[in-house]
Image (cartoon, rainbow, N blue to C red; front, side, top):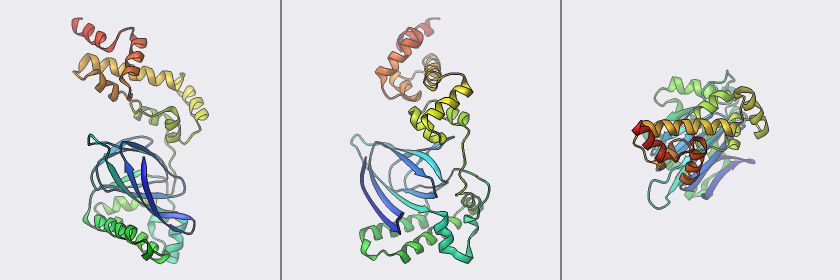
Length: 282
């Protein structure tokens, strides 16, 4: 859950914000009209993109293209912990206004590129975040001129980081929405614990359109196709690994062991343990 949110706005739009999140929590991040720089102050998170997912460690950052993402904030301690997330929103029209006649390459329109660029922990980025923390602690010092300076500062820091050429190429594509192929989305998230509505969101489709396109591609319903694939992987893991039933349940993208067992018995007419024992005897 989101424990608290502070934000600084330019006009009616949020440009810099701080979120304190209690884990575990899944956050839907939607950036339709701009890109976003995200910094994770502590603990670990998993970022899910339309065609991939990856882990973000302590004090790591990402630069996200406009699109739809899910961020799973993991609970590492026995008791729920909190994670601080700092976001700087980059709107193309605002950047054009800020830079006027000195428009940098990063806001010029090009063909769509990557969804995301992961930025390893750097002291300059950490110092930038520390400066934001100071202003969130002293919000009366913040005005529009300062916010514009902080946006410019972030862009310069990112472009001077390692692999700056790669980063510059990514930033030049930040505002060209990239539509993922539905088949790629499905194959990359077969064993994620996403609902059909969340998969549809990753594809940029309504639920009804998603189901219709899915049926056209796979000649099956999403629910049935995904169930079969999960059960096939579970059968393979039971046969070839020593993972427990609960671990296998998690690996195929299900969170409820009881539900997984019922689904498995319906698919194979055996419990997971009976299936494993039968495979060992054959």
